[in-house]
Length: 388
Image (cartoon, rainbow, N blue to C red):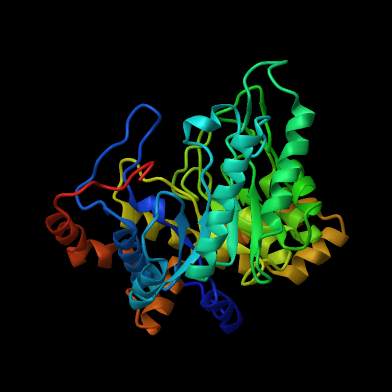
């Protein structure tokens, strides 16, 4: 069995992966959202479910919120509820993609009243962050156009920068703005923030408290995502990850399910660039569990990240550096592949047991009967899902 060194275990000990509250609600495709027994009916129950993931893995100590999906009357009470369950409230995610007013844009809209509404929504999110103790405001914009000539693309970029400047000015000293990007959907001709370069250009103009959020499912097929990770770390602008996986487009599947080697390569650059356990780089999942159960889906996800992190830490860096300097093409590749093909699961299971955690969190949770208990208890009310 592969042995993980004390140095590697020490780095794994500090790993934390934020969970998205919306992963515990009902979700599906653009054609259908599917209901599941025991689905949370409010933000309090979402947090309770997220806490189960942390209890079995010790990997998920915080929960990201989505406004307005997670709106409550008392955010201080929500914060206490999270702390009582052993987790904290994390990133606050804004929403400017569901109101009818935002059909043709929000922060980029030419109508000043609509743009004002979108800006004010983000200011409200910052107010909520003060109450929840959250550091990061994450912005994803479903904005762009479907046809050539439909919009003035340059004007939209100018209005976006002005909107972001107003939001950025409201941040507290310890707060940050992270701007996500997405290759396409729902806009198909042009998207206002389609790639890491556009996000970088926008946040670089704001200041040191503005960073890029990299979603691992938001790229054109064949994109070298680990190169982007490297570059943003090199530039000091990688603020956060949204981990998921996809086969064709933005599928939001369990991270590492479609291409485990890609996840390994990404984490290799994270380790190389000093992003692991770096307080300035937030690791978060952004997934929707359409047909699988939500809590075990999130457990599987954080375990996948942990496993590929352990493999990335196994790379013999001295040998790799020597091979690279000698232009030993196949030797260097072999060193990387040796780490990737190493089965670290038994060593991680043994290590978990030494920390008082179940060796197999998936099996332990399945045996707990928790899913049946919440299905029996959460009867009545309106289940949470997209838009709630």
